[in-house]
Image 1: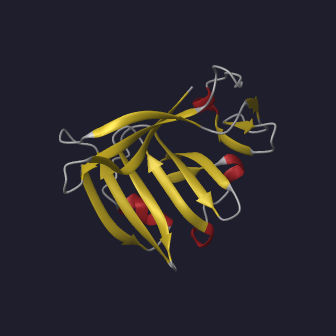
Image 2: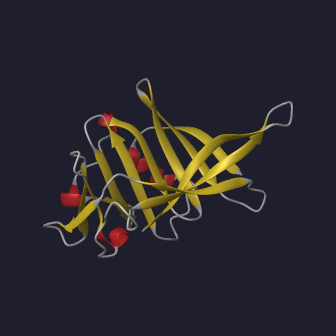
Image 3: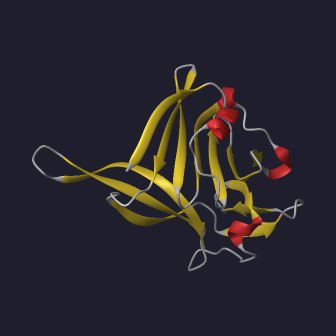
Length: 170
């Protein structure tokens, strides 16, 4: 796996990294007070109602596409970055994780859908992810494909050592 670790000064610095933005790219930002899911286009983070991904409230952010992921993590008062680019030597397990949300509906922004659950969780996601489908509790769920990196202990026991987001699916 091609990985690089580095300190990042601000979120906009991701556009100066070695991340490959050549294919459709999304992000998930975990802030102290909310979750933001959006798309990256033309070196901009596209969010519902143009909300800002403010680094002072950022706990974790994953910017990803099928080629690579840039993970930003808060460590004390700085942001640490990890760039993971898949290559032919990559040994991983591909899994599909079901995300929160059993209902979807159009929002007042045609580019975003409101995803919710009866237990109160709500967030907005790019409408192209939901693809106009109505989410439910049975078959139609929003999911994310992940790659879980396999590593080995000194005793040759396989273990998961890291993971990355790859893409959203229904």
